[in-house]
Image 1 (cartoon, rainbow, N blue to C red):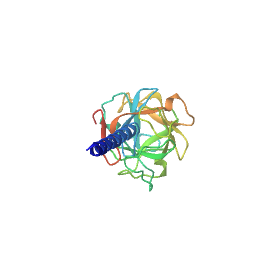
Image 2: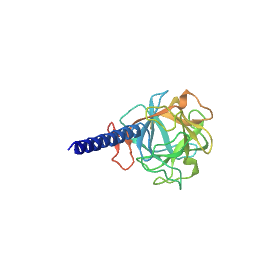
Image 3: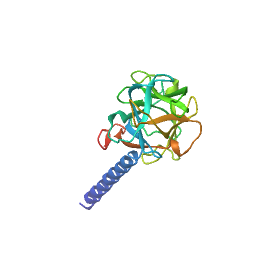
Image 4: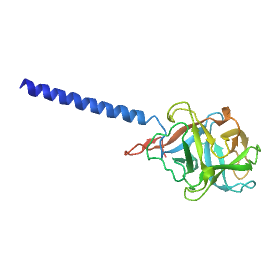
Length: 217
């Protein structure tokens, strides 16, 4: 009987340790932005969220415009984090610092993009949304710059364009009609306080588990 109780105690202890390690791992996973997650990205200097809509630039490339908006509730500010063309990342896998990704606009299916056109207000490098159904070209690829091993959800990061080496930025210029009050988003050649971004509201995908909702989608 003593042996039976000893074995049962050992098994209970083992089950407790396994459950604890699972919870610890789960808690760790929730700290990161992961592949497939749907997020809003806040420019921390100007307090605007990265935004797009089916409104084309009237100059430059004529592609779909990308702006910054103050509202936290606009559904046109959701973007999905994806892997490079022909190199998809594993769904739910934490994004590494330095990893090359695509950032795809949820509503229109176009990718965050930049190229050698001048932006309409500041004359920096134009940032647009490009492609169809999530597929564009090599100029849709951005590298996540952060200080840890992985992109932490509470951490401010930079996005450096792989093709032209500019940083995704906002410096405060505002549009008039038809997108009055929205801020210009553009590429700048050097890091500065204008190009820090943080993941905010969204649905954070976990490996082989249901999405974790952070505020309402």
